[in-house]
Length: 434
Image 1 (cartoon, rainbow, N blue to C red):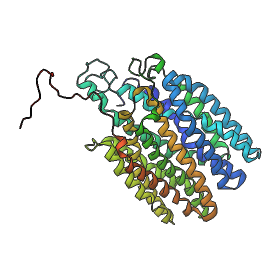
Image 2 (image 1 turned 90 degrees about the horizontal axis):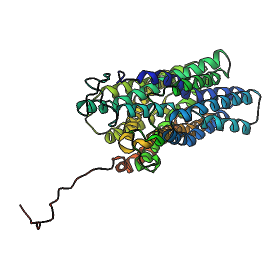
Image 3 (image 1 turned 30 degrees about the horizontal axis):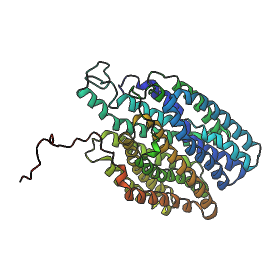
Image 4 (image 1 turned 45 degrees about the vertical axis):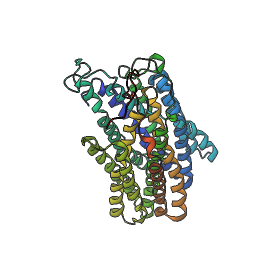
């Protein structure tokens, strides 16, 4: 997969540009909590950012599908950097809560959707309409539409797993980096680093034009004009979005509750370690998922994986020691990756190429929305009843999402296309035969 021509040109800047996604929420929580002394207030400001991103990210994806990724990224990263600077200045200046909300709104709305854009590039490079890669994945020769094309398409699940691992690697590094910068340099250092990485990485990623999928106004991903379909009109996308709301509740609930737990035991530095173990479990499971040649279908894998996630999340609130919480966090992390990877893999079969970036952003936005709601709820519960109460949020979020998945699982099956019925020429009368 990594020998695919042009892959490294967007992977490296894409990694730098997506790193801030894992730093933004924790950076806001640490800065606002430092200036106000309240996890509830910090969680509320972070929640506004998350909700704003969840609402605007799909529109960003739709615009990227229609006009191209560069046209959306360049102005977006500039607006994001300016909005973060305004949020930092207002927070440090003791501005009222409404002013922080006003700055948090454009901060979230302008978060660049690098992950979905990278996934859309993989789909364009490896999908059925991509050029055949020849004898091997990295060969530039044209081998025709034979086994080479099948080899290329077979790498799509690997690419989905790779992207999940990359996302989780950022969630290993991002919170630890933001926490270290806020604790060691200045409470605002985490957000300043986030804005800088977003601006530099986003502009470098936008400059990689050779691998950018063709926009709808230039003929679409396969070079031919197609109908403009909203990704959210696909029933399966709506079901997957609900599933990823539950996963977002795990991320948000873990971030706030682990921070509150570290404060309760008088060791704030253990927060980064515990969250890193949780994210490392997710990354390890992603590596395994990418290496396995699955014989079961993605819909069944999603149901089984999500049931395991809900079960693991249901016992987090019982942990009252660092070793036990680290072990349970690792277990929850191991269960997240299969559900995430399979959700993104299902998009390939459910959504046409002309709306794929939008579909990916709906899923990413659902994670952000679930995270925002969880940050708010867990912050309020932690303030009122302690860190253990905050861990109830992942339990409720995953249980509700699992119930929705089970009830609506039939909508995750792709529509049959091109089905041919065996019929006669109509010049003979049908007869019954044994």
